[in-house]
Amino acid sequence: MWVTTGTGEDDSAARGPPDPLNRDRVLHAAVALADDAGIESLSMRRLAQELGVVPMALYKHVANKEELLDGMVDVVVGEIDPPVPDAGWRSAVRLRVLSARRALQRHRWARQVVESRTNKTPAVLDYMDSFTGMFLAGGFSVDLTHHVMHAIGGRMWGFTQELFDDPAGPKTEAPAEVPPAARAAMPRQMAGRYPNIVAFATSMTHDGGAVVGHGCDDQFEFEFALDLLLDGFERLHEQGWTSKQAKLERG
Image (cartoon, rainbow, N blue to C red; front, side, top):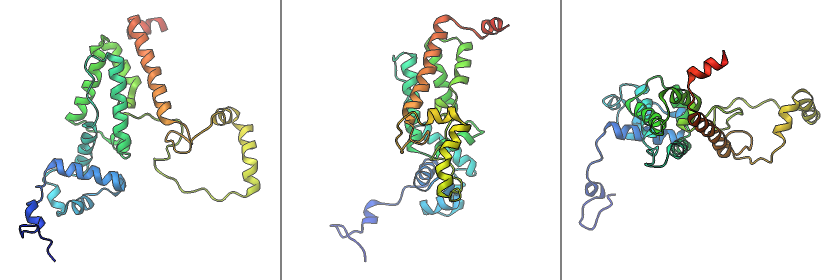
């Protein structure tokens, strides 16, 4: 049965024809699908179903799945805030990194895809160029900026390789059931073999909802490490550090 408007016309006619398929619509639909179902569920066929088109229609806008993934990274990069004018290099960098982190937290699949990309799109290169430019605009030498970028690594994208397992990452098979007696003996055995790990692992009260580790405050740990890096960059900048001089001093 048709649902009609007050003028007697059906709603679909009132809304007009659907938006034409274009690259932007394809990429945003792919991002939404990955957000909802996970990156493992993304395929050209599944995406075509979501858009209500045949798979071949997608290839007019993206050459293949790799180009689709590149474009999805571009969408995420486009969500990162631009540098804040007149904020000073340190604040500008910190705000940009934390904006990138928020973007990746909205799209939990994005880290995996960013790390897998071998092709740097213009949008990615623009972001990297702008990020580097914040240090240069702050008076950093090209030499120091080069080493800064090595040190900051994945943090420019809002993530870092963590010491602990990421519960949001790939899952392994559940371990076999451990008998109660053996389970009770495990803490003592662990403490005897790995006393330092046990000492720091049990030194904090943890919250079970974190990403970095089993209850660690992942946002705090990320910002703690970021601030340590920024402190070091600031010190080297103020000292007029150069890699040539550092190598001479090391002999």
